Length: 201
Image 1: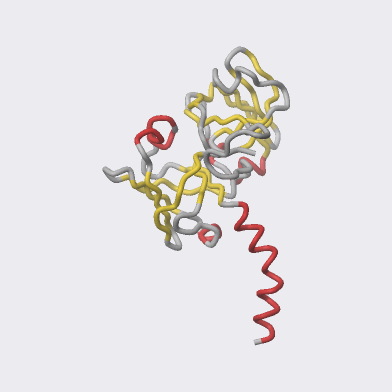
Image 2: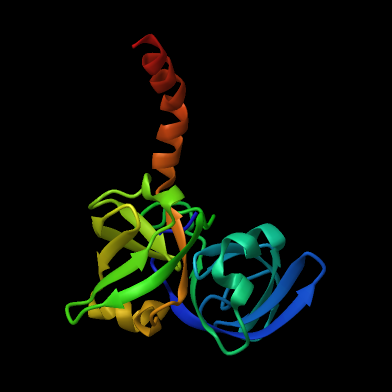
């Protein structure tokens, strides 16, 4: 589990294409300080398993399903990425409950002088996003300021802009989105009852 509180901005140092997968090498001095084979680290919001650790860098394998759903399909050496280690049991829940299971990608649209930042939202995900609810953008836990069918906005404070890659985003950039998992469970659990009620009307 993750909470969306980015620990450091890392750097992708190598991308190796493999059959139905890619292997990334990422430099991150803080997250590798206690990392070992099998540990989970969120890379721009994507939960990945550490394969090897060497100095201040670690490697991870990214399978096709993850490449298809996330912006990691387009990542290249030199790109900055948000890094967060898995939250230990009893740790602080500083953001919101996140799995690191990206639901899809959005697109950076704009940011105004007050830090209000707008992203294009895939229609299939809009039903899970509500005003004042939580959403993860590139692994950063954020509060939704406003929402429409195709876009949502968040207010980014200077600390978030400086401590994450969101301050470097430009128009057209892809971002990873993870909606609130609670909303998805509620939808699935209530769907049969909603369908039954509609049938009885």
